[in-house]
Amino acid sequence: MSLKNYKQAQEFLAGTQRAAQDAEQIVRAEAEKLANCGQIYPIKTIENGHQVTRYIGDSAATFQQFTLPGRKFTIDNPRRGGGK
Image 1 (cartoon, rainbow, N blue to C red):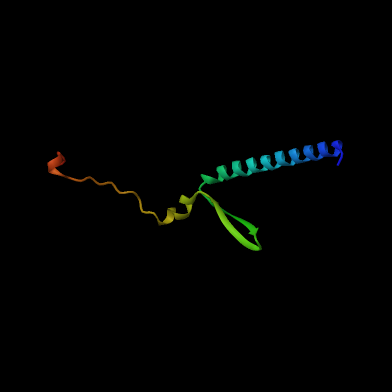
Image 2: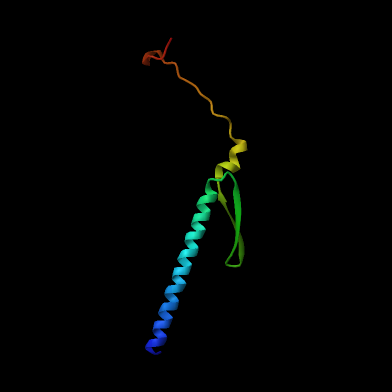
């Protein structure tokens, strides 16, 4: 391999790595936006021949319908000055 071809290969590899890093940053930014949007989204990929579904988004949105409203209570303990 000549020096010229080696330099071209290095430049190509560096460009490919920069493109991959840029794509990762874009995906992370989109995931952060979706994390607190009040919805959940399926992401389907194929890994080792199997279809894998992962969900990203606000996990509280999924279980919000099952949560009870918060309750407020106080403990009356006369020994600690809370008694009436």
